[in-house]
Image 1: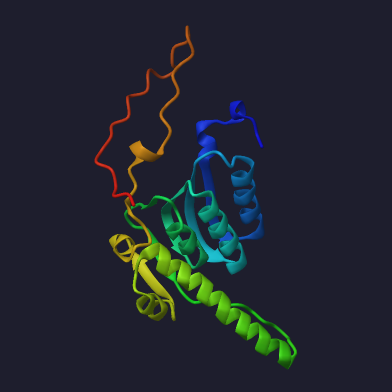
Image 2 (image 1 turned 45 degrees about the vertical axis):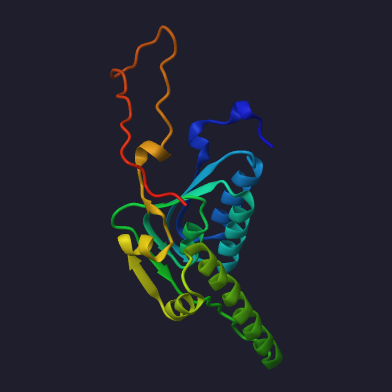
Length: 203
């Protein structure tokens, strides 16, 4: 584990951008495990990807328990699962989320394997959907029905559905500006003190 004196305020930011790849998963998981005692903010703008990667990150987020989430663009498919799994979940106006069933390209398989893989896929879909039920607080039947096909949510609809708690307040989530070192003035003048607005609803 990294030493505390190596930790900087900006280190709390994790990023899930574009496709949910193995490389992105490794980066996110590695940072969390390396700094297990720290709090994080996962910034999301992703069209999803591997359900296995999404499940790994969601499982680790739930175990860690101190990772907030922020969607600044889109949170589609597995990225929506990550958004919903945050301790405190935020979006910005104009954000888009999408839920759907698990899909998996089975390729050329023997008949017996196709049956087994279909059974596995059904169980995996149940696991992911039940997590959404838990994180959103929605009735089970409603989530299963909505996720049967691509189900898009825009802005306030994401909050109303329970995938997020409210809209982003930069004064709450961004680190405070660093104080200048003694004897040194700022190059472009002192930074203004951040103003706090009314915060978003928390869980």
